[in-house]
Length: 347
Ligand code: NAD
Ligand code: UFG
Figure 1 (cartoon, rainbow, N blue to C red):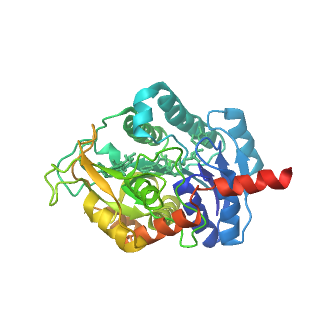
Figure 2: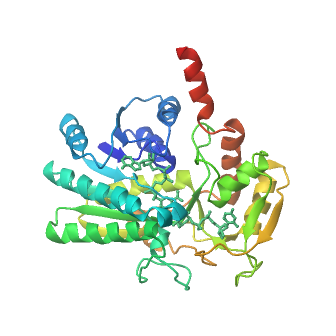
Figure 3: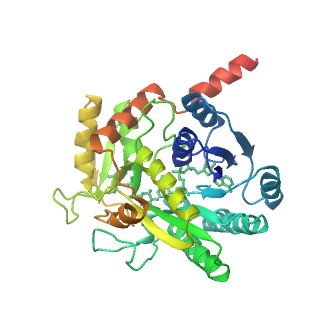
């Protein structure tokens, strides 16, 4: 099968490209590299020993998309490309709405033009909003608390409308919980720009000494130790979920939402503990106030993905921490080391 991967140079996209290539698929990667580095693409090739076409292109540029679809035979699209920083989305909402929503509209228009109706979309557990009743299941009412979350919610709705208008569409809306970890090779992983917003990249940077200490956002939530509880899922399990969703999309029609999580919640203090075990280092932290907009507890009911996609997360908390740690110590500055090497070899 030949799959267009939008955002394939990014964190989840790069891991999914590895799984797609290892399963014998052909891929075409589209990314504008606004939040990723070309080295990730080199490393996908290195891990898999396989080559693929890469287009440094923007979803907002319809002509570029038309070129990609006319130069390649595409059976399905996995659509990761989007901006994802919650805080930034509050500061520059128009940019988020334009990039994520208009980008998806243009992608769907071009797909229709070329008769490609199979789509796997990166949604998020953020579409459950401030929901209090866990585990979160797909039938719960949705909501959003920030512009980023609203882009995911609006795109889900748009894709449902697209299918109502033309029932050839077959779409999986994958609602990821908290992706962490890295490929076991230690060659690809999460490479956030600047100071990380998310817990695990923040912990890894404290552990290598790039940041002085972790700030734990609140210990007065109604959880066992008072700190926030999340459903962390290994990015390689998540990548595998995309292959299962793709199979489903290829032999059915309609729009289906699936939670991709482990169903187990860990608190911030439990994550610190697990990371100390994995790295052999102690992690300094202080408790500060809650982060505005955070919910106390979020974990998935993933039984629909199990029943309909035959997908279950395989990796546990120790795998996640060990693999995140391996990526961090092998690449203390993310993909930057390779860029320095490149610059040197050019001069
Ligand atoms: P990422 O930033 O690492 O990857 C997204 C990629 O899309 C980047 O490489 C970026 O350069 C590219 N991109 C952005 N806008 C583009 C555009 N207009 N044209 C072309 N390329 C563009 O993020 P990720 O963590 O891999 O997330 C992938 C998807 O999953 C995103 O849609 C994100 O919202 C969603 N998601 C992520 C998380 C998470 O915690 N990582 C959780 C839930 C959902
Ligand atoms: N936390 C800290 N200190 C930090 C960072 C996080 O204590 O420096 C805590 C948070 O309060 C929360 C937990 O660690 O309790 C996880 O926080 P993350 O920022 O890693 O993840 P969130 O669940 O807040 O949000 C993430 C993504 C969202 C996405 C959501 C659901 O950032 O975009 O998962 O998929 F919508």
